[in-house]
Image 1 (cartoon, one colour):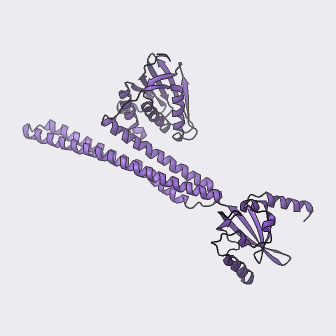
Image 2: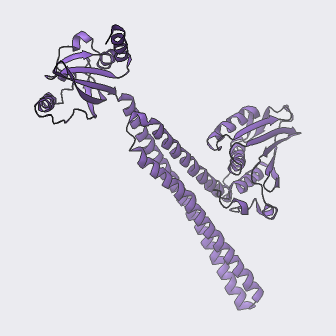
Image 3: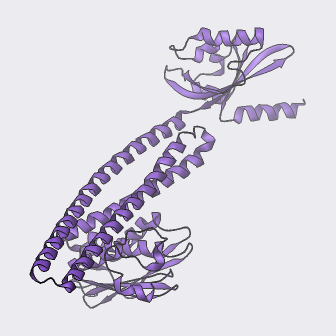
Length: 425
């Protein structure tokens, strides 16, 4: 090898981010690169000539490493040679750190040397601990939300039981008093509708929770298999999937809890003045996790709109439901338009999509709780979003309307009263 090749090889060895250690068959360090010195916080002079055991924690028995080398030299049976494994190293200050060690044999002029490649696992271990903490936190949140859902479901089932009892009492009274066939048919139809609603609710709730929970369990199990640094992109892919499923569960739970609060008249408004443009910017940022690939939300102000006086929290819930629907029922790459204007003391917000639209026969029922249009059966949803938006707008004294063309898109118009007119009191 010529001088230029020697210099190139030396540059490569010294510039690599992993540590390189060469020892002889007695375990004595013959060479280390700069990365090794940086990892263990020693100079070359302090390391070369010392036993490799010098870099091992006191809790590790040095004789084991010496026996591995001796056995390999005598018998050729490899236990650590050519096999990567995770070990701990000791720095100059006595602190320890994990690293991945790969050892290979090299013969030079008939002499046996062993080259160890040291890859620091400190950051990977931090990431693994963070993932474990995240998983534990997510488990806690799911458990908490599940309890809240159970309370909501129990309340709904109790209401259903009360309604069933009332229907049965009514049937018995009408049969005893009038034996009216017409009354019987009406009562039976009411019972049928109630049972259908209960079955639809239980089926929907089971599907909306079982699917994301199964996906979370699957991704969490797969994460355990990715222990190598080069598998970080795969870990991140499953972490994002878990987060997406958690957001989906959270949205469903929020819908159920909103229904419970609205049914119980537990809504208390907290009106105050806030900047519309700042508010919309925050809402759009929150929707990023909901949008499909290459979908965008474009906001346009048709008139000057600054501050308004309303309940920003409830308005945020309304807009999130409407924007979520626009994204859900539109294809990837489509733009969702938001047009905002003032009409006297009213704030007007239009949400325009180019989605699947609403068939004419379904439009009269679109704000009915649990109702889903016939062309949306293959798209995930609870059928609660528009009903919740409509009820919340009633609480705020506003209204919602829409226009829709089948297979071409929909426009939802929100009108909301505010005490501030055209940016002035």
